[in-house]
Image (cartoon, rainbow, N blue to C red; front, side, top):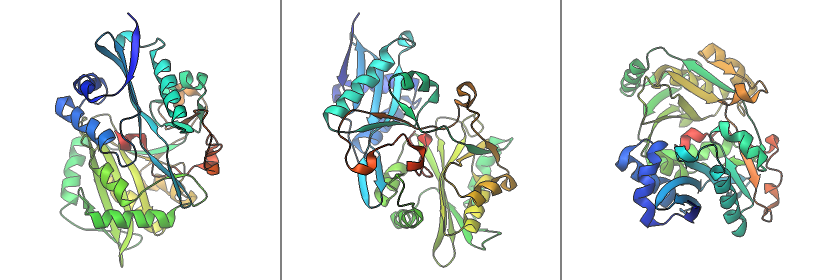
Length: 351
């Protein structure tokens, strides 16, 4: 039977919610809430780049391009990121995945969007490179392992009942799962002060941070350092569809501070109180002193080897030109790793 593709329409909602159990695993209510959050409530882009593949009346494939906002200096632009890619088991290994990517790229080209980004499953990278994608990574991570994930869940609950004293900076470290809007604004202001204006980076303002916090299939864990005002903050992310003693890591998706001492205090506190058997942090764009100090905090570095079969688990960014005119000029050459500051971007933070 021939396969046809279509843009997402509300009439396909129930089919998408059921089909995405293969990936999202949130059940009918969780999947429906996640679909609404990621596309209908997205502050940058709606569901116009959500592409479905049908075999008769059966949904057999889906790929989404959801809105992400990028910044260079004071300029901002929305470049969609691939997400929520699922192919039905009977069609895996065939041409459907590549066809959906090609059609999504064509949709973006027709709308004048010059690039499509992917921070997703790197096991698909070889196929994507053959289709014209270029790789910005992979890059290194650092992980801290804990033997009892269930116990770490209790540690987080206990940490929320007291204030921690930072050993290096003397700052007061507090934990919360529900920051107030004013605190999100302070986060955004500190991130902007620390930003590398000559690099492309993800926008982190109160609008984005509050939207991200509403992800119905994720839990976020916030640590803040205070010394005559906000001295730093750290955000941990964990999926809600895996138990705290499950295999999914708890990822530090952001850590910003006024100096290295506060940064290290926050990461050390996070390694002690965040739930999960593994705490993970990207190390691509952190400072040299921060990076070299991580082993003393219980983290082990995991560096790329240059072998795809070994490095598939490491983070990567794949970029594909759509063929549309590139504007503004700072969007040229996005395949160059030196163009990016990816400290606060992690695929898991969107899932």
